[in-house]
Length: 526
Image (cartoon, rainbow, N blue to C red):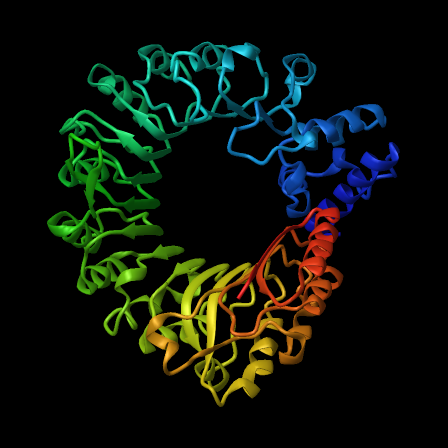
């Protein structure tokens, strides 16, 4: 039995236990499985509604005599104080400190929204703390410090929406963590007096993620600093650090393996309204980055995502300069010259985003699907169906996530079953997103793939791993038969989003039916 099959069978037993108050014999003895299998058992997409141990499930497990190992699965990741932006649900009310106290030894990942002083505990096995302030509350940023000081086992820290200045006591607490390897800051600001502490913390990190973080103007790492341990770096809308300063930080991380660089820099602020103008990163520093990649400045770099102003020549320099590519998202600048550049990486390519609409991109996508046996995620924009049908067979049979729009001319709708036959071979597919037609293709190829039974949808009945399906801007929306078909054949479904052609009463009936199966259903009309 594979780890996935063990996971699904085991969680199915857990879900039945929540309604019957009795637990059947598990499919496997969890005491005999290794950590990799155990972790696999903890991430069932079919259990997303229970992912962060909602109280309803916990209470029922406690009264059903469930043993330690099942409790470990449920308590591995816990969220307290439900965020205000989430949908209210009586089955997901906040955990009380008293309930939490009795399971401290089981919790590895803890999510807290507001007021961490309510949980001043020592969590013996905790490795990750995710803390955020909801937008309607003040930001007493010193509050997480005591909790962090008590839990020296922390490896990962994520902070979000600390709008006001981060208190110096928090930085002091982070400096004392001997095992801290990952730090993620979002919607936060760092004061000038704390910059030295921040860079000191960074010296031991393996992963640094900065999203919408404000630094003092002109902040840059000291020329002598070198962050040799950082393997993953993400800079997204970082303020106070100009392009030159951000490039200095990137250059100080010689062992980067995974790098993301997104806009933007504040151009100016309007005093009367507080509104700000932003500009994309780019210009000379992006070109310089591309040249440095070509010079093998970052020899370990295998994953790259960037969004800014650069040329196709820059993209070619990057792709040709990277010794090995697993994941790449440089979607704006794929063109005739970059069509050939990625080919030497095809055997090892795992993730690719080429979200651009052109005849070149369509042929490139078909070429990729015929040449990348290791590919697991493809976000591909538009592909002409005729290119697929007349092309070589796909070898990307390990695909798990596919976002694409297959396009047909007015006279090619009879070719749609052939595309479904191709898709049916992707038996590992879990996420399928049929994207909207782009303006570039609409005139010549106005017809997208129709996810209707009469068009060949039934060929996908073997995709039993399907977890999430989305279809947008189809010229023929889904009907009741297609939605009921999905319930029958795609047992792992968690979410469906589609345009429909059904009456209001049937829509309500289907939404209730999907909800009873734990599936989120989002329906719109053409």
